[in-house]
Length: 140
Image (tube, rainbow, N blue to C red; front, side, top):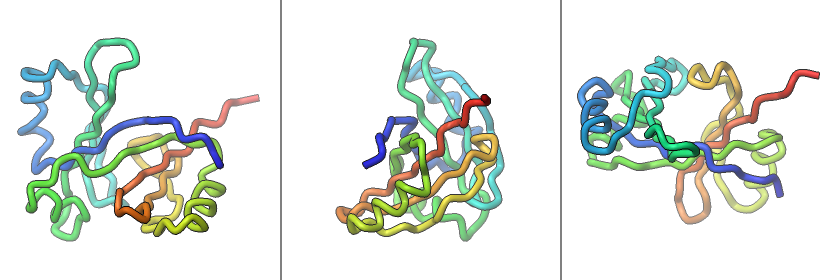
């Protein structure tokens, strides 16, 4: 099985501009990158973390449209909703997790927030939503 390396925790929010100051003031997080509008994911995202080396990264995810998958989570009060792992071979991972009973909800596709590196989404048999992110390919 491919090695999964933790990348970030996704948190659904109604408005990034409204919650960003809360993350800064209360938790000591600072904007790392973004916001980025991702029309494929129908969301706006940004990444925050503290200044501590190897600190935990949080992706704030705001729905961009009424049919955004994040819209329902925000409406239900669900905040933390996905974990993202980086993987070397995203196609291999998607094939392997499918064989293990996971349900792929979005096959590998480019993501604006990750400079067009591909992401994929799947549910585990216990209904956890997982995002996998293709690692950067090194230049020879």
